Image (spheres, rainbow, N blue to C red):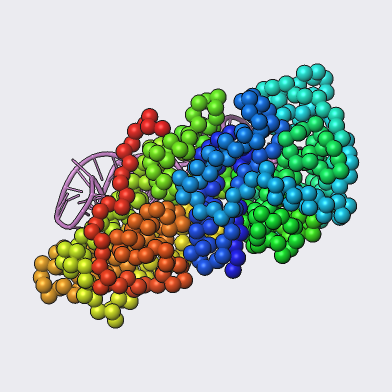
Length: 514
RNA sequence: GUCAGUGUAGCUCAGCCGGUUAGAGCACAGCAUUCAUAACGCUGAGGUCGAGAGUUCAAGUCUCUCCACUGACACCA
């Protein structure tokens, strides 16, 4: 089966922040999960580089827009690299191929007779890139968000006949699972039920954008341009942009993961655009929540922005990925707390999981010199087996609906059970009587099996740590997959183990570290 | 302003159609302890369930009012 997942195409107005890292990490986890589940995955990310805001930002930096975009794009790629993001494609909306594709798409929309010239006038905020409703008496209205004076605009724009797709969109968004989480689905339904209005797809007097064929001084509105990045990223041959059904791989996308602020574009405008071009809408859209920091909104004015690079340097990649996926309800807003970050990571990864692996390997080496003499017919008897099968199922079901928290909890449950099992059985006491050696061997083997399962299940969350765990068990992590590797009893007792060494160092709490 | 949602231990959250002393994990304290990364385990201390009123034999769980936060109310990456 094919599986396509996308992050948003991030706006390169500024360097990547924690929010975009969060989205991308979540997508990476899903992509890895799908690959391990045996699907052919297309994991697409990229950047949205056009628009007035970027033009002006570049200007203020005294840079050509393209150079500004290059600079920021580099930072995104650098960060994704640091976070071990396994994306397959990185789309840039300033690429030639993308431009060509936008033109081809546009001509399809034209053929459907869905574009007309209209007039739009009103007070416009460049920061928001939108027209604002203001008090008519106000001669110098100010944008409530940007605190800057609005500009009066009266321009001819091309409009897209969104209203034509009212019924089709209504049907689409009703489909179970199309919009997640549910609370947001209701908002969109509510919004659409009020009646869809056409929206503008071009801007005049904006140079930094893709030109509209046949309309000099019109460029495409950033949204029209940016959404199409998903299509250009899906081309079989990235260097040959031809918009036909055969030229696309893995379309439609299975899921667009986005921040809640841009849900409407993805759940309403975008499907309508695709329908207009005779293409299939995406299968689902997931709008996740926003992150605050210690209870406060992150923002430049407050000076409390948490730089993902700094966090990464402080806690490490596994800590960062684990915390974001494990502790924040995906879909809801979440609060980043440094104290909690340290506690959760240390407790879960170092104490519960890391220590379990460490103590078990130590015993194994000490008493059996790696070669654990087990009776294979008894392997299936372990009480840990039953429990782990249950938890594996929970994990998979949770992951399928992007419930990272529950999936992570399933892993922790397996680890806790294994730790408890050891304490119950107390092999260190049993082993004092040599007659118990077989029993002890079986117990140790069972716990090692749990460790192996844990190592595999951790892979989508924390790939680096997963590899370290599997390495200690002498398992080649590149060969694992869920169908084959999650059966109980696959650890080869004769293959030996690596010398134990902590797979996860503890983070020391330091309030002012980041 | 209108409409939604949320508000439960220090932190993150469970609590279904109302029913005995309100739960979990983390953090904290004590005990125990080496197979282990001062880890694992056991025990314990933490809550007038946002505030107020009402319905009921009985409310965290239903109704109303209020407060706080979040979101939607059309073109904000």
